[in-house]
Image (tube, rainbow, N blue to C red; front, top):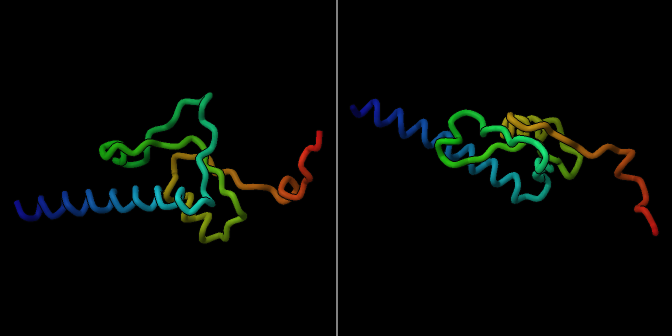
Length: 97
């Protein structure tokens, strides 16, 4: 019984930490939620739905990430498409009207 309880606690702890890391990525400001208003939002990966976590269809990275940062975002948001700014679009002047 102790082993089963310990395994359940480890399982829950692992997923709660993963969810905290996902939320912390949004709080930093360089990972943004993409527009998913016209699409069906996917389920959160793994068993996150058991803890009330929602999936994301698209994640936008505000700055050009390093390979390590990109890998972290892909691991945290495995259900989402990752969009990054292109060099060409980030240097374009704003439309003046």
